[in-house]
Structures are given as C-alpha cells and as structure tokens.
Image (cartoon, rainbow, N blue to C red; front, side):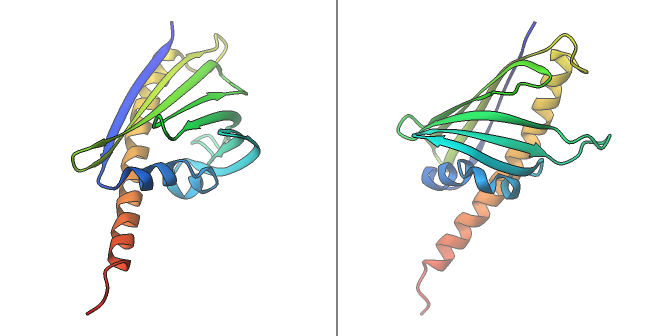
Amino acid sequence: MSGHTENEITIAAPLDLVWDMTNDLENWPQLFSEYAAVEVMKREGQKTTFRLTMHPDDNGKVWSWVSERTTDRQGRNVRARRVEPGPFQHMDIRWEYSEVPGGTRMHWRQDFAMRPDAPVDDAWMTDNINRNSRVQLELIREKIEQRDRERRSASVPAN
C-alpha cells in the first residue's frame, strides 16, 4: 500500500509573490508553524539540498531529515523528495502554482509509503498530512496576503 494526498488553496496575491515566499527556504520557519529550522546544504542550479528540523512533537521528539527540492519557475512547479526518508520508504512531493481569478492557486501533491517498521501506517500518515496541510496552507495564505497588502499600501503615494 502507499499514501497519496492532494491539497490546495487560493491565495489572493500575485503568482510572483506566492512563488518567491514559498520557495524562500531559509524563511520557512517564519512561513510554516511546524518547522524550527532549515539548513541549506548545497545549491546546484535549481536544485537545493537542505535539512528540515521540526519543532518537538507531543512526545518531545524532534524530527529532522534531508530533502532535495528542484524548482521550475517557468513551468510553475516544484518537485521534492526526501533524501533521508526516515520512517518513509519514499516521500515525493510536487507543488504546482497557477494564476486563477482572485489570485494564485497552490496545489500540493504527496506520494509516499511508510516503512513496515514505522510507528504509523500509510492510512494514519495520509490523514495526518491532510490535516496538517490544511493548517499550513491557511497560515501561508494569511502571511502572503498580509505581505501583499503591506506592499500595496507602501506603494500608494500619500496625498
């Protein structure tokens, strides 16, 4: 068996701003509530290898892993995978961006499988990812829309 999730949100902001903010890895701890730290290890063209560290879970465990992320600005998508899969046999992620009426739609797709000795199974992780993705997408939307409002108000000349 394997897991698959798809989540999306429309952000009332221009695609360039959504792209820039969501692909600024060093600022992910300020964008996502779940990440405590990001360490960029290597950049090669559009591919970045980095370590993500989460805030401690309810049991005090800190999860950390290395991922690769390849951006395609022209194609408006990002592909990522865990290099250190931890409890996953594999974790493959695709982010897609599109301009829609009212802003930018960001679509997340995750395909994964848990290892047989993992503490949870595919069904549990699917539910967990879906629940958490909705929370993170809402936070991201709020922060990007706030930044867009600030940019627009700063560019309006005072009378």
